[in-house]
Amino acid sequence: MILSSLCDYYKIMLRRGDVLPQGYSSLPMNYLISLTPEGEIDGILYQGTEENKKKVFPQMLLPLRSQKPGIEANIVEHRPLYLFGLVCERGVYRADDAKAQKSHAAFRESNLAFTEGLSSPVAQAYRNFILRWEPSAQCEHPYLMAIAKDYGTARFAFCLSGRPDRPLHEEEEVKAKWGKLFASRKEEGEEHLAQCPVLGEMLPVARLHNKIKGIRNGQPSGCSLVCFNNASENSYGKEQSYNSSVSEEVMEQYTEALNFLLADERHCTVLGDMTIVHFALAAEEDAYLDCVNTSLFARTDRATAEDVDKAVSNTMHKIASGRTPSFDVPDAGVDYCIFGLMPNTSRVAIKFSYRNTFGELRKNVERYQEEFAIGKRTQVPPVWAICKQLVSPKAKENAAPELEGDILQSIVSGSPFPRKILEAVVRRVRVDSDPENNHFVKLNDVRAGLIKVCLSRKIKEEEKITMALNPQNKNAAYLCGRLFAVLEKVQQDSASGELNKTIKDSYFASACATPAVVFARLVQLSQNHLAKLEKGMQIYYNKLLGEIIGDLEEFPKALSLEEQGKFILGYYQQNAALYTKKENQSEGK
Image (cartoon, rainbow, N blue to C red; front, side, top):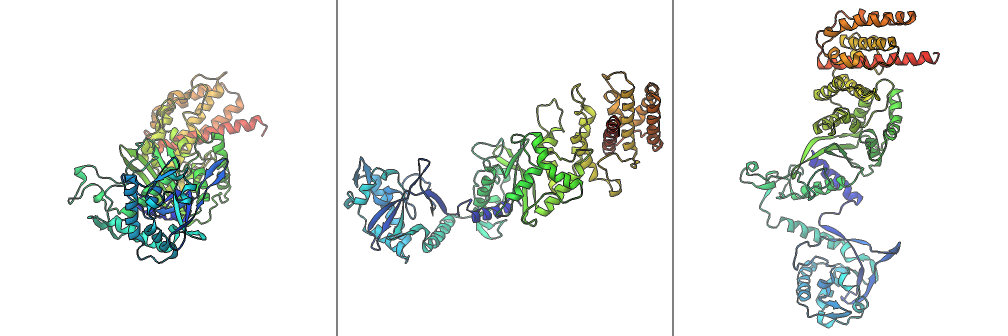
């Protein structure tokens, strides 16, 4: 799927002009040589302009330039040594240079063969120029003398006299013949033909694939997405990438597209050790990229946490109030692709892949945002902020890369979060401690929201977890969490000053896993704490404790992972409700 998607994107890039057509290269052109129909030079036109005190030359699309060392001429040549067979030293032209002679001879041979049979006026003028030009007789050519100082480094294109708007390389006849020649050159010597898995046609197979650059922690020289380096990977006598059957055409397209995406920060973001590439299969991508970047990939190196919250708050406030969120795009039916890539020595490992319509992606992200919202928080943190909550706050390393990929894939695909995500966040809540200056490390709204998402996708609709405290939820684990929050609040309110240690510090982990072991003692201790409260508070807490315990038939002996998540949410939501009541009371409400 990833190769097919990248090839589809390549075609869009081609229409937008982001990449060159196969078989072409783009070069800044210094001069345009004007030819008479007989092939005589009647002018050499300077193409440069000046912008901010710098010379700027127009880019021109020419048949693919040779990259081979040594002497090899190009079709529709642009280099002066090949075109004229002359060297220029201190304003003096010479035709006796051996390299210049060989270069010009190679130019004559290849370009005469190419222009044979072409009938357009400019192609005929170009052919006549090649036939008429004799380097030894042109050492004092007036037009060359006028550009002597630039001659050695200049590039030249051709046009017919009086038609600078119709250069040789843009002639349809020339482009058509070059296309056929380029295709035949690619097939020359190809012994390996196979059915391309992307195009479905019998095509020459790429033996080696171009390198992919820009992947975090990848080799500077690039990594290979498709490669076979070991003898054990070969089959039926095929070596290297002949095993893959991927054609040369597809190889060039997908590598060009992927390297383009990796070089563009709007299409690419880093999540831990994983590089995320995402793109819309539409010519106008801005609206799609803005939505996805804001909702999923807000980055700390570009914005503060407050900026991130502001960026997504509009969407989340609309979701919370039942209105349509701001995912304004031109066409929700456009396909959107998201791929997670990681380097594996010299190769690229695909950690996950996603392709679906943007409307489906939007629905999945909206569902995730709604499920994540808890308590007063409606803003959903970006994925990197969620991943930070899966490791100890004292740890220097990030969450395991596979967890990051799993979270992102579950968000965009709408699938249940893997069990290991719930295991990681529950473990952190049970194990971590709150330092004296921060009471939102052990259990904060990000961890609570993640637990809520994990559970929401695994329970029945009638058991749906609400944003705030739900007194109608009679689940034993949820009730135990609520009870623990009330017992802790009773302990805190009965103290004359701030406590150094509460029952949360000593009993939370065991109460979360094995309630029956600790709750009898905690309830008994609470009677001592209640006795220290004034009468009104005693009545309030006794009533609340009675309501919760009355819904419990017995304290569970052990809680499963999912039930531990419900315990944590019960604790979190009851605790938030208790403090909200206290704030309201202090405000006279």
